[in-house]
Amino acid sequence: MMSIRNKILLLAGLAVLMLMPDPISAQVMMPGGPQFQMDRDFMHGQNRGPRWKEHGRNLDNFRMFKMLEILELDDEQNDRFIGVFSGYRTTTKKINEEIESVIRSLIDDLHNPDIAVDSIVTKTERVKKLRQEREKARDKFHADAAAILNPIQIARLTVFEERFERELLEALRGFRNPPTPSDEP
Image (cartoon, rainbow, N blue to C red; front, side, top):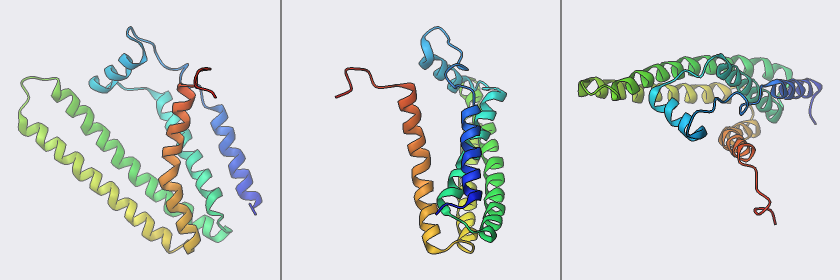
């Protein structure tokens, strides 16, 4: 049975999701279509702007609300888990921002024919180390969560982490590429 608090969190998450601007309408169409725009953004390290960050925050909040709903925490667990999860999210956000910064610099280097190979190797190694730090932070989060959650909740958390992003990506693909009448049975 879902508690009233979890129902409120779910409704708040859905409200946030509903208030998100349509990602397709925010996309700038360039000559060559959306694929060209994506390739150009990727290879030239274009900043997607504040709206992109807003989408990320909304998605993070939705993820947290959905996770809390699935875990079915009691009040004591809820407070402790949110503290642990917030610390994990803050740590991974910093690591991800640093990775993004190094990647942007690496993209610029790849477009410079005079760049020293040592610089590229150093930045590539830095990204590798940051990814390892992110994985250590995830392991610490799981260890801290295990001290709060019961085995059933830990199993739910594991399944949630493995499926949430994949199912969200599949849903977005379906949104961007709806089935054509010939695809339907």
